Length: 339
Image (cartoon, rainbow, N blue to C red):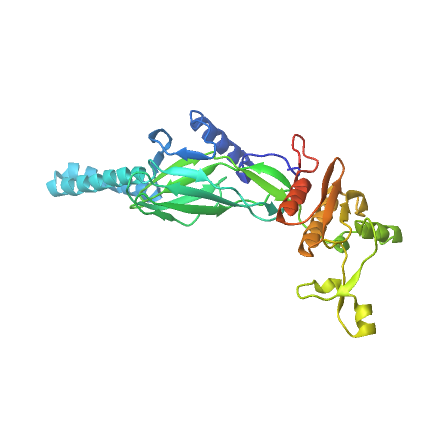
């Protein structure tokens, strides 16, 4: 999948069997309304079938019934119908364990490419009865650990998703299921709760890129994070200053700690420029700029970002960091603006 390609489902549909499964699910859920970011589980969207153990029990009950008929044994009839009654009650409890739950999709924290996003849903009970052993899965992935709800309570349930490339993505289809109380039947429901998954480029240092080693490239890399004005100022070391800004030559001359005041709040802003990254691959450039943005933020520098068609003015702080990373994540995507 190309970076930034918007995709609603995960990798479960990569095979012909997976595509048939996805087509079947879409056909089954075609009458469901769009969920948005919150949905309530009604009777029309709860599905239930026996598990493998349930089918084994059905086969055993058929043998027991045939034996009871063959020998006209009243005790065999009594035992068979008693087990059938227990199974019927289990089906009712399994179905009711999901019915009436209110499900809300929580925002997905942005991640870097190659890192698994975390899908989190909030479950709320409105019927004053406890809910037991509810599992969440997405795009045919591994189910989460079981969630339990107190009567009229709420809880959060989370499951990691497949890592995604740089860009913005939709949540894959979600599935809530339960086998409570006996594990003989499984009830489940599907959701299409909507939230965006923002994936930043994977940060890669400039020196880790496959450079040619040409002198002009080195100068270009240095210009990628150079202040627009005066050279560095030297000042005395203050607790909390990054070690990589210590001026070792000044330390050797005076015996006291001094640091370079490059890009500080009182100095000239640092511009991180697309043209200043010595790489031909656009994704490599974005990764290098992402690493430089994180580095500038960690050092408390005032920095700006220049990309073709996009400019984020100099600033500092977590909000500015988020704007710069979002600009890098959405760069080159049709129909999306980084502003």
